[in-house]
Amino acid sequence: MKNRNTIQGALILEKVKNLKGHACAEEIYEAVTHEHPNISKATVYRNLNRLSEQGQIHKIEVPGSPDNFEFRTVLHYHVKCERCGRIFDVDMPYNHHLEDHIANKHGFIFTGHDIIFKGFCPDCQKDLHKKHNY
Image 1: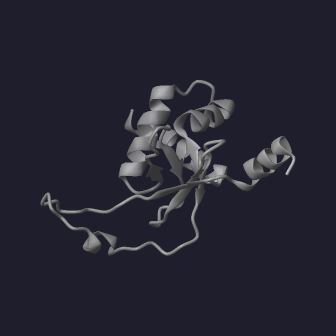
Image 2 (image 1 turned 90 degrees about the horizontal axis):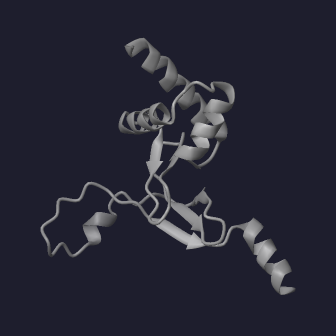
Image 3 (image 1 turned 45 degrees about the horizontal axis):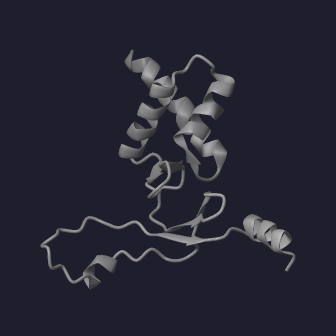
């Protein structure tokens, strides 16, 4: 059974890598079952979480949306399109010391941070422009 999980994990890791972007577990499940129809949704979800915990993929927790996964594991920020909901990388350096600037009134030991910016992606900007005839 352990070997099977390793094979399934490798399939899922390869699919995340090939998607080249940010995808929710459901999208990854659909991509995996397209080629391997017998794999269960629970197996895909379990392996995504395991691969994330092992640092092989990055899990992006998106408030109000399903978690997304990506192959890029270096710390970086994201932007979510307010219209279509897609997630994109933000081209700016990650601030490893941002927590040093927090007034820590509650006594936390900070372990990191995630920042998700909001906006409209280029595709949705075009659609909005067409809809309003600007």
